[in-house]
Image (cartoon, rainbow, N blue to C red):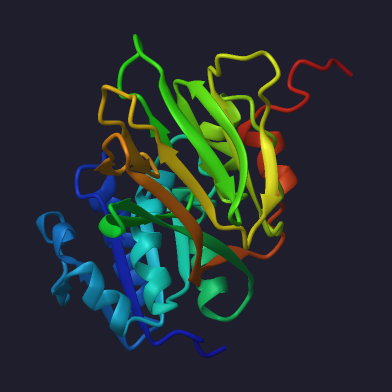
Length: 293
């Protein structure tokens, strides 16, 4: 069967134990099946084959498929680029949990050729666009696949903010912060903060308060097309950080607004046939592991 993908890019962090062996295995496999293999420039330090070294943006523009080598953090980082180019992504897990990177290194020779031949499941995930606005101007912007977190930046001090959704005031809150999560991120930081697990197919966003100064404050689930606005009140004495996927950091000031909405571009994830979100939860979250037959 002819491969469905002709130009494949490999991206990931170069400092991973055992990466060179996995990279060599993939390059041998891909070299027999696809027309062109591109490496992210940072992988050049461990590559033993002669392949074009390109930036992540260049790979996103040229590739039919991007394979991410690493954990979920590596895929989150790559996803924010690949979504812009609508380039499908396949993850090989070199990390711990692996909710997004679901092929293990010992499954590469079996599952990667199957995906190349068209035997895969396709899934779309939405991302969030976030702007920090000051006096009506956008002073910083980023995007996130998992979550956006507004927090005080210190464990000894709360922040006070107002939440509005689609232009309607919801509440004023004193808390350590607020987690705004997509369904993809519902098994990450949001889960640790007491938020619900959401199926990835849901068109919804969850807002999870972090240690709120009221017993009645609970997570809220809203429609995915909502425009969410957080106003950092002038009375705050700190400049709270705004973090996207735990990787991209911006800083807000008292009086600033943080505005979030769904991005127009989606990430396309490819999974081997038989992939199951519930099976991933059973495995990664150890559901039922204490039960005795």
